[in-house]
Image 1 (cartoon, protein in one colour):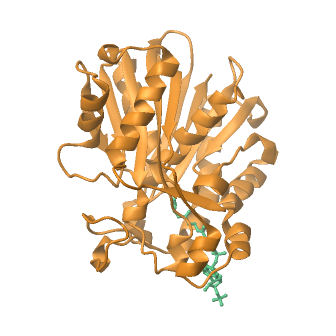
Image 2 (cartoon, helix red, strand yellow; image 1 turned 60 degrees about the horizontal axis):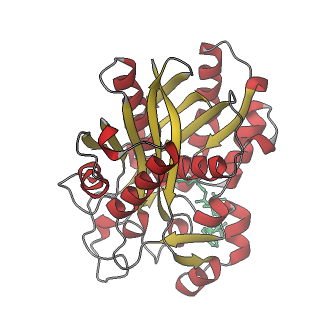
Length: 321
Ligand code: UT7
């Protein structure tokens, strides 16, 4: 038994900061950001929008797309590192909003690889026959963790949420590899939670994300192809059999480099970081939702999802559409 994706949804906040806006905050320019990252704009939470608000909107849309009623949902797993509250968890807040009264709900945090870990968790429950219907969500308000005076990080990140509905099915495919290297945790850190709105000053330095961008870049371009190859070897598949690779949307140069290292065409690697920047655990489900809505995938397509990020963590999953 596997959990087949039968619906997707996403929520993108409407406040947009383009590269020109950032050039007013720090010493940077549109050309540098586009060339080095592929990012042109990012969407940020505003007003009443929060991490759980976005998650609930994305989940509601995914349920509608799947034609599943909220009461049918057995499990909600939310991947996030930017929940506005420590307790209750974001998944419980989503449950309350969407009325998934029968669901068991919890959050997990594996930074930008979070969605894959959450998907694995839901697949394990479904595979064991414990649950039949699950919602898996990636949701982030990274604007609350970004130092908007630090040009080496603020250009990269954005806010948003994406969700998928899984239904137990005999037909389909799920396989995964995931890894963590805690010894390299200092490469990407944020040591305490920001409880203020992201524009409010003054802020405690510990609430800002710190990153060694070069190290993360090198880690991603070596480990992502390694994970994908291991996954395909395990399934005795070749890269030619994969229709699409949905990678964590951190930097277009990382995506291109992974494509090259796998000997694959860039067209098999759709991207949307130009519009949203890096939304961490939300980036894979947001892109999945966009492509699903565009009817990009055909029934039976093999799709590889791959993420990497803080922890350090990384992994790849194979699904059959
Ligand atoms: O989800 C995982 C999260 N993190 C990532 O995925 C990050 C992965 N890493 C990256 O995407 C890239 O390393 C960055 C985009 C962060 C940086 O790109 P880079 O090509 O590695 O640039 P760099 O840090 O080597 O900096 C090159 C130059 C430096 O100037 P000098 O020392 O050569 O004079 C920087 O000071 O570019 C300068 N620089 C900037 N210039 C204009 C750094 N940031 C900026 C900026 N605007 N925003």
